[in-house]
Structures are given as C-alpha cells and as structure tokens.
Image (cartoon, rainbow, N blue to C red; front, side, top):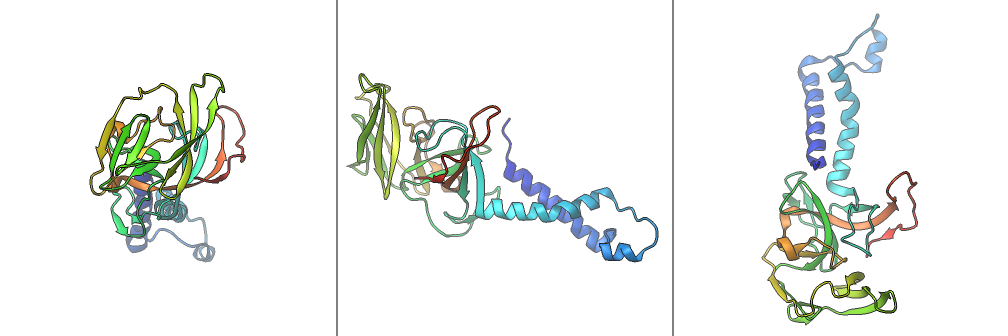
Length: 260
C-alpha cells in the first residue's frame, strides 16, 4: 500500500507541537524534573501530554533533516541499472534544487536547477504519493528525438560508447558509456528489444523535465507518461550508503560511493 511518509511525519510533528504549546499556555500539566523534586507525593501527568513532550524534539529534528537536508530512499526496481541496483539505500540531497515546503513542494528559496545527467527523485506525476528515481535527460524547452537506436537532444546526437556485451557471442544485452551534460554514466540496453526503425519525438514544456531510466528498455519513464513538473521535484540522488539483498541477508557496503 502506498502512503505519503512526508505527510504523515508532518502531521504527527505538528500535532505533538500543538499539544506542547497548548500545555504551556493553558493546561500547564508538564513539570520539569526540578519542579517535581520540590513537590511531595507522586505526580501523574496526562499520558498524551507526556508523550508529546517526549517525542516532539525528536520528531522536529527528523522533520527538519528529512524535509530540508537529506532523505534516505531505497531502490525498489531495476529501472536504473546498472547505476543503481535493487536494494541500494541512497541519500537524496533535498536542497540541491532549492528549499521546498514539505508535502506541498512549493519552492521557498532558490538554490539551483536540475542539470542534464543528474539522477533525480521526484513524485510520480500520475500518482504523486509515489516517489520515482530517473535521470534528467531533457531540460525545459529541449526537443528530444529518438531515431535508429540513437537519442538526440536539440538536434545533436547524445554521445555513447559500447563498453560491454553479454554474452560475447550473439549478445542480448549491451552496456554503453553515455555522455549527458558533464556526466558520463553507464546505460543498459537489450538487443532487438525495440525495432531500429521506431522513432519518437518530445518537446519538453517550460518548467518541466524529461526523465529516463538508465535501464533503457526496462524503465517506466517520461517516454510513456510525459515530463515531470518542477513542483514534483524531491531532490538529487547523491550517494549509495549501503546495499541489502532481499531476505535474511546482512547489509553490505561494497557498493558505497557517489552516484554518477
């Protein structure tokens, strides 16, 4: 079941904060350890107020860190292979593209804009409660075109170099070094998955971004549902901090490193 953790965290933090504030102003039930030491007998505080004071500081710190600095994500699918594998745990820089209000996504302080080649986390336009991760291929106003197994941006073919085929004889998958902006990254393609003659074109609307997975033949991306509006941006994926295979297996740190 999909749920919006950012919304839940915001609501819970707000409720705890309101309870603490109301107690300070009106109920005045909460007492510090020093005040309790001066009183005789046993003082029983309302359990809701007690929990609010106990959890609000922790919730507030987590809310600030997660909303404006860094947020952890788990890779659930193979759409970004070979760059990101299923089971990778990554950190997403929340301020790289500007500070945004949690849940609403409204930019409150401009810092930077997505650049071609960035790996970006965003809210899935057809279902904003879901987070997706893909690579930025097209910027606002770009004309994206695919023809004869090659990708073009504004009339210029995207550079790529074949680095590996599996198997060596009659290969069915290929790996390329692809150049997008200032980034060189690996992409995966299945031989013969799409006919060489298949063509498509897309003009990126202003304020939106065209996203594609590095696993080009196995990615649900902008080719199928359109561009990503700026308000859907979550942040830039910057680091793989651990990896865990499914099942009862311990996390490993063999894949730690910056995301290219």
